[in-house]
Length: 118
Image (cartoon, rainbow, N blue to C red):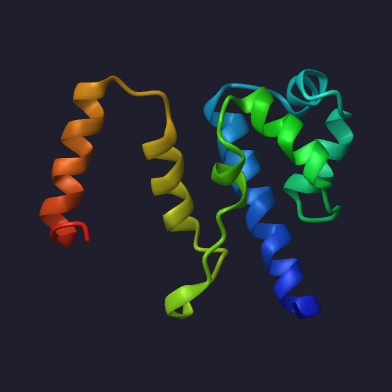
């Protein structure tokens, strides 16, 4: 992986972490406390300034109550930028805690817009 790609992944991970943290109404300090990390470190990761170990990332995923893959699924296919803010907004909206009927409605709308899932 090139240095540029590593920076993009770090930036994407930070943006995703920030979106999930805010979605759950947590401060950086509170998320740090829940994951046994410092709030300052959480902020540095969110800004893409620091890398995070897989062990710490796992603790953050547990603290956010999301699968580890939710934080790490970075797909660079189709020439799309990992910094796509609109995609992040959609991701944050969809991953919020929702009732089953809300999830089904969202799925139906997305399927109508983009066609049948493969």
